[in-house]
Image (cartoon, rainbow, N blue to C red; front, side, top):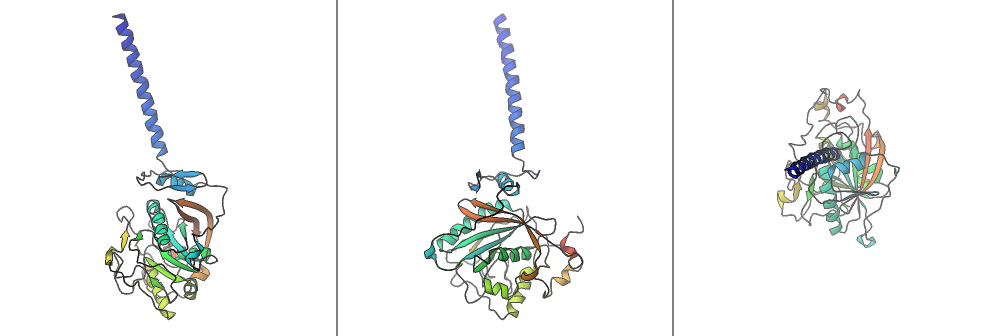
Length: 325
């Protein structure tokens, strides 16, 4: 019996130690799952790989850490894909962005592989609005052009949640005028005649001729409708893809409206202003500061990720901030 009591005591002690170790492991795991911004991030089950310097990861939380952690590398080398036999033109894929890291992990390798199959020289530029103002898609597109125009001779304004699935959808140089790739006949959601949002491609000269986009549109929507007026006023024709028979299945729309609702509220005089042709702002006077540039590789796709802060003239557009917050 003496041996039995001793063995039983040792067994109980072992159970206590195992319980303590297990509890510590759970706590450590929870801490690792938290982003450096202090918010809980859901792990990504995909196999996308991200490299930044010596950082490799397959998680959204580590992607956020890579982009938000200060580093000594402030400059980016703008390498261009890939073979000189692909032709003389250079495409800038400009993606206005805020906080949609899961979609970035899916978008970047998809569009990179899609353009490689078409033998299109391209750079992917993600312009990240990192300030407290409401999202301004148009200003981010203007900034993207200013950062890329010395290296690329045409650009595509590309929503991050719209993935082309038909290889016959050409991203080639649009010499004859703006090409609305996600035309109303093909876009999965928007079908009105004057719609030019989603994915619009223009030459550098055509974009500068219309002075880019208006900087007055804070929140979601209508900046592309104002751009339509600029293009028409400049007497340019808007072209659409030809020979595409896949209809509304031409794109995969990966936006989760439940998780990321649109900021569609209108404050002050925003409703009236958003329905007028803006003749005061555009590419020539967008105000911003570049905070940091990162050179990322996401599943083999080179990405230029640029953190910017916008400026807002509260006397002109007080609706750049949400008055309810």
